[in-house]
Image (cartoon, rainbow, N blue to C red; front, side, top):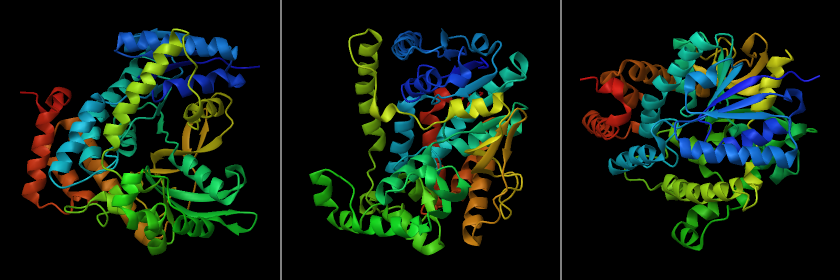
Length: 449
């Protein structure tokens, strides 16, 4: 017999998350009868998304109820779980942050986890999501929170430091990467034995085998002999990179450290000072620096499709909207007290023996009625542990800068971050001031007077 729950989606009109989340929960019988509350301040988008998911429910004959509201307190009333899925300030501020960094000589392929872009995302998002958790303490104190917003590590640290609400961060990155390895090696991810730990978007696979096969060695050979599909103009400009194969940066780090970082070069390269720095075009590593512009243009196309589908004039989203987010499975494990384990982001608390306890790490975490419990991993290779502790120090400074509106701590976080090591102090300081001023409307704690 199923156990219905009430789940508040803060950012419920998100085209990135809501179509796949709705499909996942509709198709998950263990939570039949549950209510999914879509909360979003954009009433027009919210109305469209509600119509879309209602059509999806009818098409799938699902036993799920949907509600929609622009009132966060109303969404949280009676909630058993909350899921945060919004981008603080939206894509235009994100594009602006990365553009300013580019102007100062740092090209960020993603700009959502670390580096100048990741720092600015954290300064904007951390206080907003902590406020959600603090609302939960008052409105639904027994509820739990799953965060899908970036920068994942810093947000989760903020949540677990400034709120009593049990929380964890969820990212499908490693699941998607294992699926990619599976396609190359002919092995289903369900048959793989994987040991991995690190931080979000820099999670290191230490061991990956199946049926006695060393899949990391096989994947290394595959990436060295195959090239990704790219446009003719790109291939012409960066022919040498294409010839080097897939995930050149990740393969280089595997050969150096003996573990494979995930979920791919666009994220991985931003955690090291060796690949992205002043005077280096990221194209030489097989990456593009206009990822955000492409994402914004694609969003317009996807939203048009959602609007058509919501009106009953077009097909429902397919393909990439088959989800690996696992929110429904995580919640099911908690509701039924199954203690299933998932790759999640929580404070280390001894799981990785040579990483500080307060660092938010991505590792295997058991989920039960009592919360989120990181499982013992053991030690990471010493150099990888050292990098992980460094990222943890950046997390700490980012959280405190965000919560206190402290420009000095923000500068310290920027200077400590490996991606800024090609800038001198005055350059980094000038870049930070420009970024803060450009984001003034969404950084109230930095501009109280």
